Image (cartoon, rainbow, N blue to C red; front, side, top):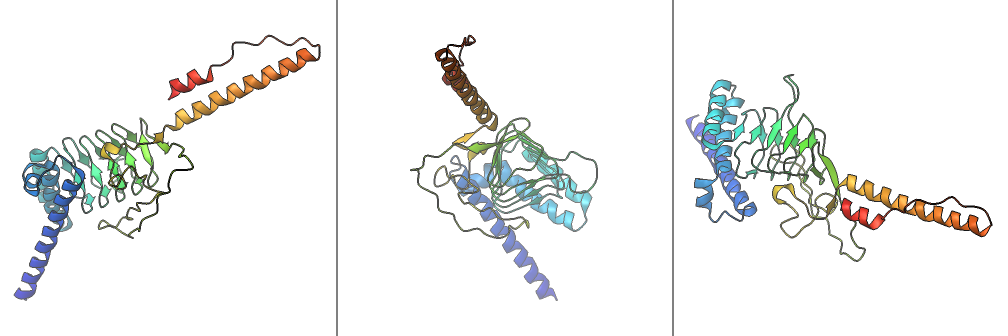
Length: 290
């Protein structure tokens, strides 16, 4: 009996050590300012907050709610990062800088997510059920962003800094603005090489769908950009409002051209054509939109 208990404790310790190694490796992989594992262990509050959270989460799961909240409070005091012990945090999560991060009770953060300073994963209702967001694997949330509500941010999605997200974000999409809007990739020249899809896993350690780093989900900026975009910024994306304005400008310019043709045809037929107004300067307006 004692041997079985000891074996279980050793297994739990080995699992915890493996998780710590993965957390350190995640920081070294995603932060060029990190120069050694020792530096990460000693100097990164995001790493410290995750260590505290594992302890708080273990107490929470044993229904020791007050001790769990106290450990989470200590984490907030020492790191400036508030993670409710009820939140589910996956593997290789990186909280960069971290000050002011708040992760609510029913939040779920999948594997390989990156969260920058000032981020809030908050709830918008008072009912005790699911009221905080779910981040699937590989999501990047930029500094100061607020993700509010019990919806899902899809695998590989990116939330731009200071955005306020109040509805679901599709997998691989980039959301920016207040309220956040989905920005779309700009048109790629036909001669551009296609990106081959990569393999996808099935499930993360938090029970969430794993990220699928393929061309249909995560745009490839560079070799590392397939799985990470600092502060949720993605190159080569276009604001949907800017797209709509450009289409309207092009449509009006085409209407002007056709009206001029009709007026010229009326003049050739000996009919009096109405005087036209000043034509739209489509090029100048398009540059203003861009």
